[in-house]
Image (cartoon, rainbow, N blue to C red; front, side, top):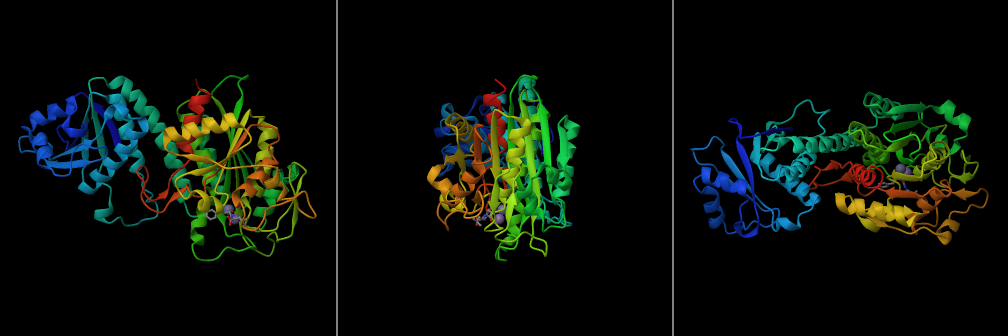
Length: 490
Ligand code: BES
Ligand code: MN
Ligand code: ZN
């Protein structure tokens, strides 16, 4: 889907999108189209028993012969004065779905609010995502039709700038979705590292540590997880330095388990294919870095991803093994399927030691238990810092990538004490499973303000969402782009 700006409606447009408030108050730009259509829009609105201009309602009109376009699509906004940027994006997402069903190709959106329409178009863009790389045949009726969207406005310059910034966000989200959708026979740790390395083209400094370097650093927990795999584990560090030498660094750390079989504590076969998504935290970090760099964000942000494959094999780690982390702390591996926390223990510790960030945020598809607690509408937020939590929650509200704060605490932490090592990698059977993971991570960040986002429920959509077709959602990219803009670029 291409986006263009023009001062008038191009000749080859087939569909014009206009908007109305509740009870038929057409926007000025829509009134002009209504006049050109000989009053067809107002008439259609009058005769429709359903359409009243409520937020999200859509009315389809076949344009009169006198017009070049064949269709006019009227979108209801309800009370537009109450609209937030997210409302505009959601309206765009819903409209895209409608246009795609209609088979619209070249779409014009005449507007007196071009800056607002940028957000609407951003919503359309996010919804238009497809992962088609492995289809050799795309059926005619499944092929997306919407090819070009033209925002028709006299004031293109400011809106083109805004559209370009939003395009950077969509590109980052799409990169994340591509990575998360990619099957594990393609996207193994080394391939992931290669794709992250491509961010060098945008000015990101990327370094990759292999197994020998990680062994040298004593990262026994991360390496233990990857031990059963033919593929070499990788720690990828992406640095975007958009602010000054003295400005603090934000660090964002991602779980990059390219496939999670569970290891020797093997998962059941049914549904195991979903576990290609177990690198969604790392995918988000990579997409975020793409967006920040392509927008030249005025912030210092380091993205660190621990990429491994959790496989059973004759040299896989066993339940009961004790591993030594880079921090020196030891972990008894009770269950090889609780592997994400082992990867993050070393990745977080490395990050705190080497980046010395003033805040560190990790993202991980860490626990099935968070899906039981929160479902798929919110990610779990665990943090040792109330200010960081509040700003993240606010960014979540603003972007629709919502969070819900979950507890940490001494008593939960005691549950992961081991009889023979400093800690074990699981807590009490089934109780507070997500917190058990979080308190383990907390032991590796020291006093650094830290937040852990458990995105196991939000990274993949099993049915279509307003801003994403079913599949990888790219959850976290828009949230963290917003967080960086709100807290560091001001
Ligand atoms: N990657 C999984 C978490 C997961 C499970 C995400 C299901 C999405 C759906 C993680 O590595 C895992 O296996 N966690 C275990 C932890 C348990 C062994 C303590 C879990 O949640 O069952
Ligand atoms: Mn697991
Ligand atoms: Zn996992």
